[in-house]
Image (cartoon, helix red, strand yellow):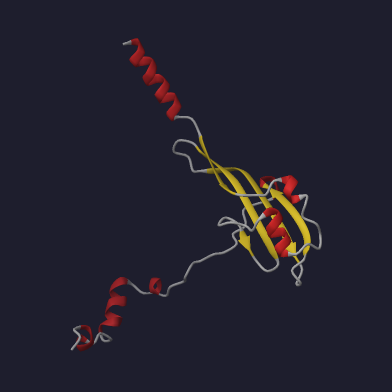
Length: 144
């Protein structure tokens, strides 16, 4: 009986512990040190690789991102570590700068916002249905 109680206490306490998930990839510092100003994009790709799915490839820069998220019980996930490396390129495709940013350097920047504005919300539900009622062609709908 005592063993069952002890196991249930351990399981209860372990359920309350935080879990961490890691996302992304940032090249190690020793690899970044090999990237010299004036290097080409191909040379950078050979030395540290191209940014993966979590990174961003743009003509003017490559961004490597890595972050660690803490999940604790019913709380919202919290980013506890963030590392961003930006390798900037000139118009000719040569390295002009290598920068590193951490969580303490600022807020999360949303690189892309994919929201489509719709005019449907301006109309009520029934008004929207009634305004389309005259546009329906039964012959086209039934394939005749």
